[in-house]
Length: 338
Image 1 (cartoon, rainbow, N blue to C red):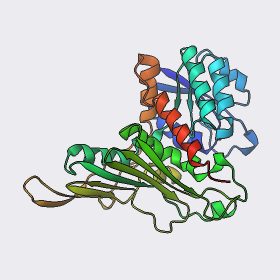
Image 2: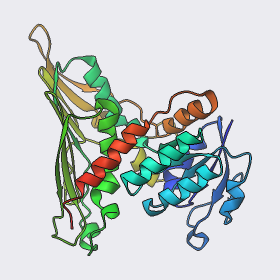
Image 3: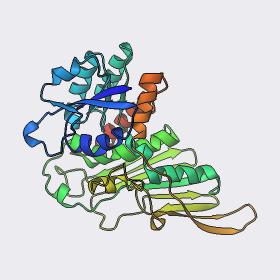
């Protein structure tokens, strides 16, 4: 059994972590630290102890792993404190404010034989897993280009922001999802082209980004905007022999926002109208067009990996160098914003 606790009792903990952890009989959630008890808005779980005393959780000998589920401004402080108390730590994304902070946290953990990892749950998005399945089928032939889109129509967000802060940028807040997908599957790129904009002008929020990752002949593009009334396809993949288009995103977040939880058999499952379309010409020159049944996404697989790493000594899912590279990319990406 892996016994864990949480720092933070807000949306992140209650929507993106607990619903998946509570489905697993290998993990016990013992304690949640309520940072802002006056703002508690989520129902409590009877079997979980809630506290306003952080030290109580930090010194609890039963708790092996603590999850830092707060805004990124406090990630370094809390992660360091957890490690100093001899416990493993999982940190929400973006992992840290800066590359230097991330480097220091990893170095401290390594020196004290502790695990620290970023919560990269989007590695287990249905659409991303389906794209991998299609690529690995070989039907597209040699891969040439991948486009990944993460769009919203939320103009009120940048319009209500009247100063630029790098850590509240769109790149930091949403690029941390898709950039990790790129790095986890395609590895370290040969080169990166950055197009990171403030569409409302200087001194305003970064509300658009378009990053191109180059791997020999392959280009992987990550594009996001707050001003897309009609979202672009989640993934478009081009090979020498065909293409694959996945219009819709993974549905786990959609269901979580409706309080439709993972204990439902059809949680996060794509319907046929959500399936992507694979179009290709086979080795005999025959044209094919077919729907591809989506893979099943599961954010909880992050916790399965943590269990295996902490309890059974297996390798971490998210490598330190992947997280460090992402922090470097985020920092470099917002350098031109003011």
